[in-house]
Length: 219
Image (cartoon, rainbow, N blue to C red; front, side):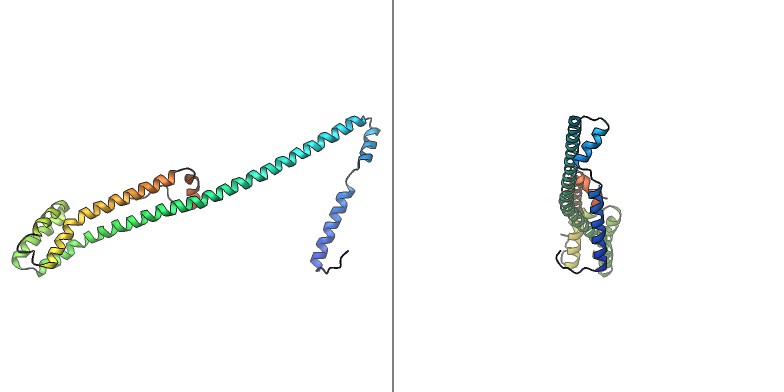
C-alpha cells in the first residue's frame, strides 16, 4: 500500500468504506452455494440457471431504464434552461421598448400640462391687445384641447402676436401637443401589443411567470 498520510477524519472515512465493502462482499452468495441450496430444496439446476438469467436480464433492464430517466431529466433540464435564457432575452427587449415608449408618452403629456401655466405667465406680461386673445386661448385650453389647438394655429399668424418669439413658440407647442401625444400613445400601444404577443408565444409563455414578467401591459 502506497504510503500516504491522512487526517484522522480521512482515516475514519477510509475505514468505514473498507468495512462496508467487506460486508457487501461477505453478503454475496457464489454460484456453487446457490446451486447447493437450490438442490437441497429440490430445484432443478436448469431452472435455477434460467431464473438466474432472467434476474440478470431484469436488472439490466432496470439499469437501462434508470439511465434513460437520468438522460431524459438532463435533457429536460437543459431545454428548460435554454428556454429561460431565450425567454429572458426576448421579454427583456420587448419590455425595454414598452418602458421607453411609456416614458416618452409621459414626457409629452407633462409638457402639455405645463402649457397652461406658461400661457398664464405670458398673459401677465402681454399688452392689452395680446392679453385678450391669450386669455381666450387659456380658456379653450382648460375646456377643449382640440379647440385650443385650432385657435393656437390661428394665433400664430396674428399680427399682434407673431412678432413675439415666446408667444409664437408657445402657440406652436399648443398646436402640436395633441398630435405629439397621439403619436407617442400610438407608439406605446404598439410596443405594448408586441410585448403581450411575445409574452403569449410558446414556449416563452411557460417561462414568463418564472422570470417575473407581467402577462399584460398596464395602460
